[in-house]
Image (cartoon, rainbow, N blue to C red; front, top):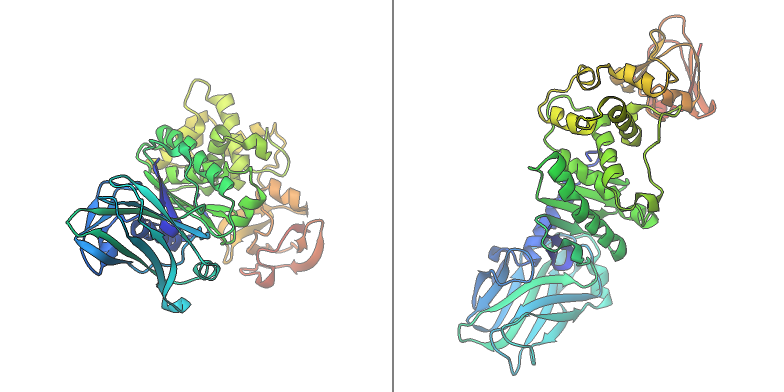
Length: 473
């Protein structure tokens, strides 16, 4: 079931990264309740009596009003709406055919200098009784532009006039920007609800593909990995920087990235796998989390081939399992083929172990009979550089914190660093034993700005997260 919530969000029945746009998710839920008429308390009436109605076109409830001939219904304040277009629709069910009657739509926002700004009117003449009808309101260009701005004080007023003072119930539902959020058939009879918000200018075809990917894949992930996973998931198109990320039960996708990669809608699979992964306890290595999400995309993605996306077919110099994502996913698949034939896949076993808070370095021996570094050497046919046992140590955080990698004397271009699990622009502090000289370069190929160290540096100043190649003497 899909529910388009007025002016912004849509409810469809049906990875944890750096950013945490929780306010966006909370906003979607607020708009869904108010403009989907889910809660009588979200609206006030100048006349008549308001009540909740289970006779609805979307969501769990609609708003009923009785005992009036003219009533103004005003919403609770709303923050910035998404999916703004030039047309607003409203579902209405009137108790008897009206020889006259109208619905006027107004918006007010002190911060936008809008004081009961008139949007449009819709006639109730010739509207059939006791059946749902959809009214349409044209949004003037100046109001459409205003509603695309930032605000937190928008109120919507519906002024109803019709001959219904005999106590019969008039019901309203699904105030919505037409064309703002699609209503695909793929969500029919789904037990999962998808809260959707978008931003002006996003492609509705891409959005529908993303929504249908969720409904095709999320139930399979839930059944396989976590039957207790959330039944309501957020899908939010945003202008925030990044590609895609997850925060609790909400997933976020950068508008420009998706517009530039219209076939890459299986990114939804990766992000909703993070929703399924919620509940892990104890030590939870991020590379396993991200590798598991790309494993899920590889297994369940609908358009990976069309998008030219795949996980690696095997080990290559410059890869490392600690980078997670596809490199870890390919490593997991190799373990399955090598040591888990006839047993649950590594990703399934790890999911159970992480939910129990039982992960440790011994986990790999339990699953395969070998330690993690031994497995990595086997996977690479002995070609992966073994961990150094002497030399300098580089750290991912200042103050010698976070993950550490030891590097012996030698010349390390970016691919050589990556082969040792040192990512580009990753180093934030360095320990340099006596007798060593370390020259770091901002760019690969030993080019760009260079800085030399002959002793420990707990902070790197401008060099922090800027290193792409290193010479150690």
